[in-house]
Length: 192
Length: 111
Image 1 (spheres, rainbow over the protein chains, first blue to last red):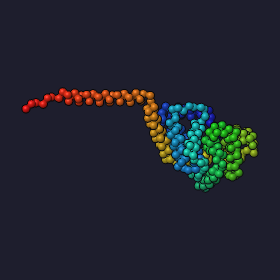
Image 2: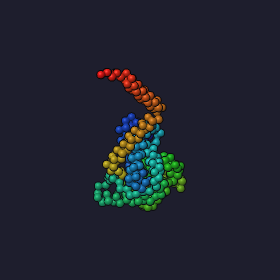
Image 3: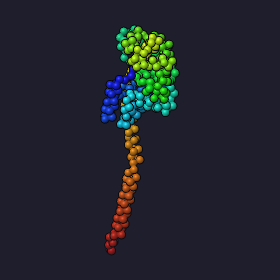
């Protein structure tokens, strides 16, 4: 779940390259745009607003790039904080709307694809139904690969509080979703 | 619950040995949610559009910043003052020349 030291070093190099040449910012953007959009989406409840917040977040990122100082945490932590501040500043209320991901599925059998889409719809509904703070924690923990400490800094909560939020969220999700699809079970076992 | 939350967090950070069978189902659902959230949410053209908006907003902001810096620049009053003095001097010279021309105008020829 956490970034390895090598991954963080690669990211540091990407930031240094972008500081030298703005065109080199593109890989960082490509890596994080969907995460920031998903986070903004969970906060704004509106696709257009989420796009506005995402664009404003990256505009700020580009603007601040010359002054950005690497602190050994994923760049996304800074982006999440900016996106959250932008939403707060515009006084938008937390929420969630239907997401229709343009995702590439590895399933080729039409029935598998249909099954996966149904399952995704269930997951989307279950995540949407979580309380706002649990939803934010889940999006950053499992979509943004941030540690509880990093999420805590962004949300203004302690590391322990974020662990509890994640734990409660996963407990609720498991209760609502039940056991995963067989393919997912294999994936989870492979990961652990 | 705090202990369970700690063990789950450690297991999520690639230390599955700390999780007991009680937390296994939560790891499964975590993997499923991760897969769901990892999916691309924006179409390529939407990503491109947002990128272009971000770039142009950043460029606009940079222009504003340059103007703001120029306005707050300490040299600005000196530059404006210098320009004003130059204009005033030029005007004074022009007036003096005009008067001089009138004073030394050729006398009308008696017919």
